[in-house]
Amino acid sequence: MYMARDAQELLKTYLKLFEIKIKSFEKIEHEEALSSTIYKLIMSDSSIRILKISFNKKRWVRECYCLEAVKKHILVPKIIEAVESKEDASGAILMEYIPGKLIVAQSLTNDLSFQMGSLLASLHQIDVKFYGDFSQDQILPPSIESGFSLLKEYFEKSFKECENHLQKELLDIIKKYFYESLKEIKNLDGPHIIHRDFKPGNIIVKNNKIKALIDWEIAKNSFAEEDFSQMEYLVWDKYPKTKDAFLEGYKAVRSLPDLEQVMPIIRISKALGAIGFTIERNTYRGRHKFVFDQCYRYLQNIFLK
Image (tube, rainbow, N blue to C red; front, side, top):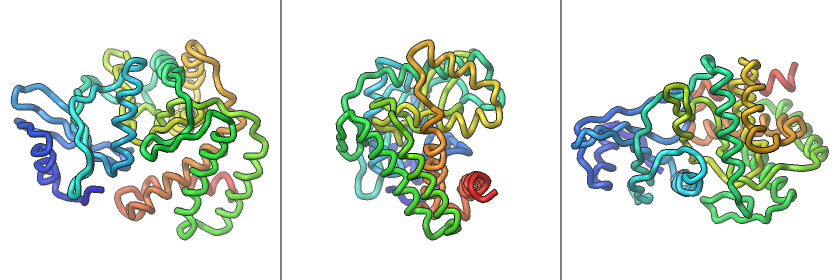
């Protein structure tokens, strides 16, 4: 894990590791970014590259693995070079620059929603043989029990991270609801490669056409339902008219999972996970206070009305 340093000093470390020279750079700031550091580099020959410095080794492994695993199936940036973590520096990836802009939820059209749905379905169409986390050599058999195991593992990890920071009454209600709801789930759609942060802000578009799906550092082999949670929370709750076009785009490629049975506990787990991440990084009172507060309010509104 890299320590916080001046942007220019941090960049110099990686320019040496990659043995590259640049004319200029721009640190890419992203309001929703919780983890890695990203630079846009103007190279000595005036070409453009993206340098992504991973927060830790696990995130670097996932990003490298997925960009290679999915590149023949969906649009993603090409890896030019990658360097592993060292004692004083996290792993980093030098990748191609994709011209365009990130999709903004409030300007999402039906056409782009349809494209996004088709993109997600194309990702879920990729054939995989196991559940698990690429960064841990975690291989679980392709059974529903493995899917349930991942679902419980994520919830319990997130719950533990939040235990000393959220109301006990709220946590007790959430825990009871999660395990009671889990008993009612009959099936999960998996295993598939799951992006786990599929949202407008991770999709590059140009001339109203999707050009790339980015940010793969929390991906794993899991169940398809999980990849709908960010769209539910960040887009469809606020802009419900975009949902039908998205689902139609998805169904144009593959059958839609049963979202109603599992989405509520996925969203609760995701909210706890986001809170837990800000606590783990000790940014819940500073840089990521808005994430902590937003997710906390979401849970309170559901369970403490």
